[in-house]
Amino acid sequence: MANSSVYVLGFLMCIFVCSTSEAQETWCIAQGQAPDDKLQGFLDSTCGQNDCSAIQPGGSCYDPNTLQNHASFALDLVFRKTGDCNADIGTPSVSDPSFGNCHYP
Image 1 (cartoon, rainbow, N blue to C red):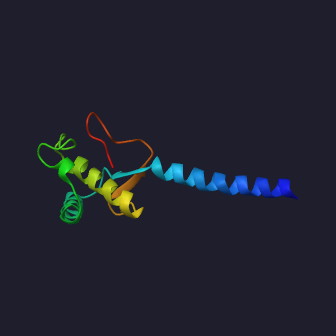
Image 2 (image 1 turned 90 degrees about the vertical axis):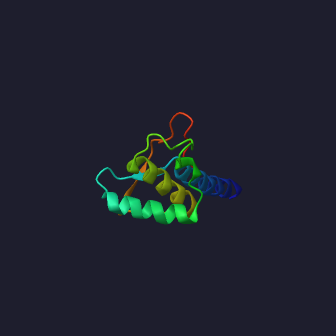
Image 3 (image 1 turned 90 degrees about the horizontal axis):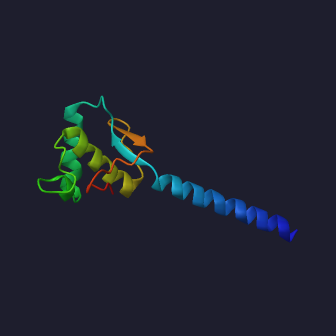
């Protein structure tokens, strides 16, 4: 009977670890077809409430200076805090969008 308890405990630990590592390996980025006005509105709202210094002039993620790039950073910033990838303009990605000195949250 003790052996079955060990198996159950191991199984539950695997579920926790697997789901935790999956969340850490997912990013939220802007959809390619998302309308610019919605991306800009999300960016304005998010950066009014969060630290977006990385996508400001001189920041590590400022270049390329595109709405798509900056919105992706803001989407992932919110995703890290809430676990929600805005389905209207964002999409989950298993590829790390970080590049060069730009590290997504």
